[in-house]
Image 1 (cartoon, rainbow, N blue to C red):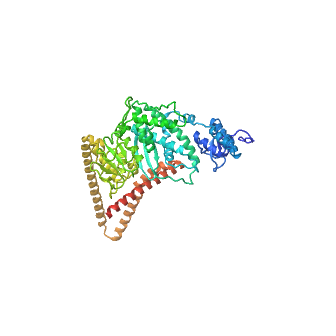
Image 2 (cartoon, rainbow, N blue to C red):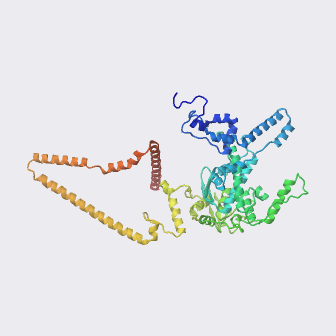
Image 3 (cartoon, rainbow, N blue to C red):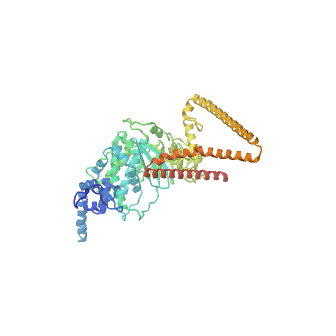
Length: 593
């Protein structure tokens, strides 16, 4: 019998025992594919890639421990209970018993994902690290229209919109926003909370269309989990400011689609210690209970909150010391003492989020605005097309790009290039790209760098001179003296070598002229040439030695690392070629002008 022979039916070993295919997992759990996907999404279980795929490369593999983890999940039993209950509803509808079906729908079993949030994210930092996709998904569904075909309800869209506005209100209130970039896909934001950088994408405020190549069933499952995660996160963040969660908003502002401004006023009022809890009248009937409660909330908020207080987000919590780093203080005072007014055609929600986050006071055109367009204290009017109305000389009319460029540069940029009219604005540079690492620095980036240095009263060093040299002038003097000495020494050595070479050639010519006959001259000249060739061939080439030395680490690599290194070199070559292409285009444009 061979040494490694294993009879049929015995225990498996290796990858066959550690991994199983998706079909084997479905058979083990006794669920269908949709329910299995739903369980994997909410539990955070993903496919694995074993080194040796026992069943073949066309299968999806899962770890055995992950599948056993799902077998003991209480949510699996809850899903089975819901499925069984839905069969009862379908049976009642089939018998045309509408009353029984309606009664069963009101008593349908429900479930919560709160336990899974605490299980997957033991600490708050863990939740912040996994918040990028969550915010992007919630902001996406906040602008989608409700659709019966995709099972997207109006209630879920409103919930996503509420969660996204609560998140934005907190970021504005704490001045945690760091970067903004407007692209074709949407608007990228980056905030910093407790040392964690959180980046998310918000779609543009245009009509969104459903596509047939997207499985919205899977997206809705992710959204169900992300809604719970963001609600937990907002709860923790609001309680860190001593603000009650969920917030109670001004119904009038909610009706005017000014949710973000209403949230800002609520946070400011709550941080000052005002009580805004509603009191329901006991004598009111059950039919008018909701309406009376909303009217009472509105009356209390109108009584306790200032009627028109712009920039309420910018006030600090009076009874709590907030530790602010240097960058937060710089962001807080960027648009300090500046008042902005937004026209109808600009992205209002984005600017209402960005401007208060950097210390600005903002209003808009429409009802519920903090101040009107004819306010004389307005310093900047954000407009995207030439205005046909009255133009005020006391304010500057700029495009929205000026706001985003100032935010990324952390300085107030000159407005001459951003004026509305026939002038083309400067390029909108991405703050997420490192120009030095890419090998190409745009001209406008150099201009912004000089403006930043001027704002800090810094002196930019010359090429090849470090900042420490500017701080100590003796270093510059010493470097200048040493460089001049080295250059003089190198020139002297070069001159000496040229003189010696010239003397050698003259002596060689004299020896050749001493020979009388041409044959003797040929006999003597030939060995000299052969001798020179032999010397040249015997002397190793310096370039070849350098090439062999450079290739030595590559030869010592394994095949896998060598392929990875070659791929890196190809990427660097493509990057350098693209940089050269951009430089050539710029050169051609300058030549045409």
